[in-house]
Amino acid sequence: MGSPFLVGHHPNCLDHDPGQAHTDRPERLLWVLDALGERGTEAETPDPIDPAAAAVVHDPDYLQRIQSVCKQGQRVDGDTVASPGTWPAVLAGAGAARWAVDRSLETDGVAFALTRPPGHHALTDRAMGFCFINNAAVAAEHALDRPGVDRVAILDWDVHHGNGTQALFAERADVAYLSIHQSELYPGTGHVDWTGIGAGEGTTANLPLPEGAGGPAYRAAAEDLLEPFLERFDPDLLVSSAGFDAHEADPISDLSLSTEEYGWLVGWTRDAAAAVDAPVAAVLEGGYQPGLLADSVAEAACAVEDGTPAPPEGEPIEPARRALDDAREAWPALADPVDPQP
Ligand SMILES: [Zn+2]
Image 1 (tube, rainbow, N blue to C red):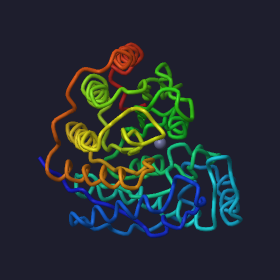
Image 2: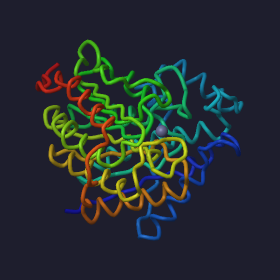
Image 3: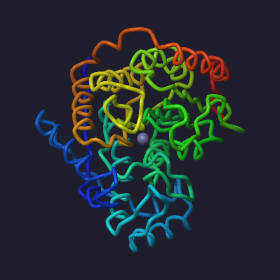
Image 4: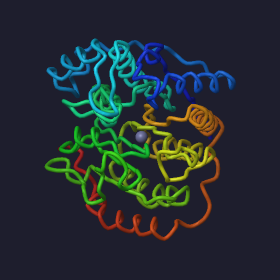
């Protein structure tokens, strides 16, 4: 079964310039646009957000401060470097995230915000890990403002844990955060035992996977953990924090997904969301080898439009099986239906 695959991209996202030696390069998006163009997918151009709209997830003082950091082209930390083009880029990226919500609701398909810099490490008052504005969080809050959307699930399969997104929604019952990431990788958060706090207890679910876990572990996670979670949480919209940096040829990680397995993962995300009547608003996170990123996104577009390919074959390796067992133990709190009127 096929669904529409829409792409939103604003050229301002090419102007973020963290320097020649940085891995977040504009070529990432240019290669993806080329690959999508070859298959006839043309990007729409979403409007950037007004800075005040970012205050729905970020501290207003932080937004003022980071705007001036960008103007001056300052380094925030070892990884996170601003340039004068960064501020227009992040406003355009957040605008694309909101566009993805609106278009996915309109079409019941997958709308993909092709943006940079990424967003899922950004905290309410801190830029880190290449990220300045948390696009997934902007998307989730925007979705909750739309009629008929009372609950949103954020599924983050970037190879790094989205500490920023987790922190922003840790106490929320109306936003679930689910992450599959490589254990012990940057930023070191995302332990399996962390399941949220206060009203948000049970709405955070982390699956840290060991090196080499590969497609079989993702398939097992999808079937045994994520599908039951989504069924019980019953979101009205799924935000996908789509990072393509778990690719087997990506030198920064070791979770070993192939290009074809990324196609399956995106197709499965659409299918799992459709099973609970939720459209998918996806935002690009990582994926720093332009050629691999372009191939993986093109594969994803095929999977959404033409039908999900067969899942990865084989059994998870032993350390991955243990990680899945640990998650099954840690996630039972999630087995109870969440109160729809928190
Ligand atoms: Zn990443």
